[in-house]
Image (tube, rainbow, N blue to C red):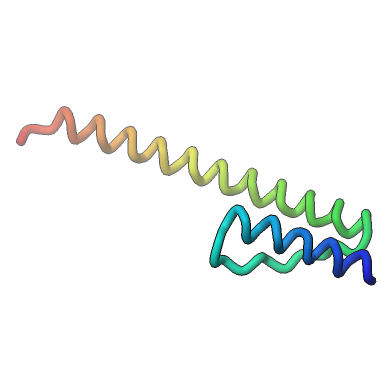
Length: 72
């Protein structure tokens, strides 16, 4: 468990350097297997967010084009 605490402290330190003032999210880092599970969870979440971002970009582009063609 000491290794898990050290890993969590290291993660929190890196998180604070990247996102000052934001609390580090809770992650299970106590073993290689736990870190692998966290990595897969983060990858799935990232794929969902990338899809949502692509959808929003499409809507923005569509609406901007439609408004550019619309009469004043």
